[in-house]
Length: 67
Image (cartoon, rainbow, N blue to C red):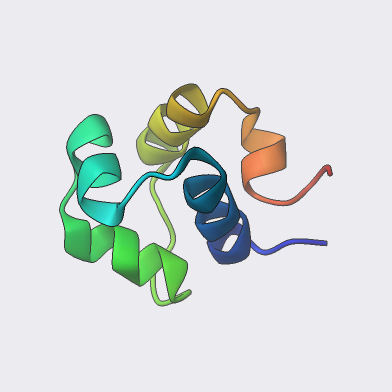
């Protein structure tokens, strides 16, 4: 089972999206993306929704509940 931090890094790599580009797209700071990817902070539900929309995946997939 994936952790959110691992799944986020994987999705960014698949789409060739940098932290800065992603942060602008979902309206958070680049530092927040880094904190999420290093498993130092968890996103709010509103951020999960924006990430799921951006990557066109379900929240369940994003957080590692399903593969």
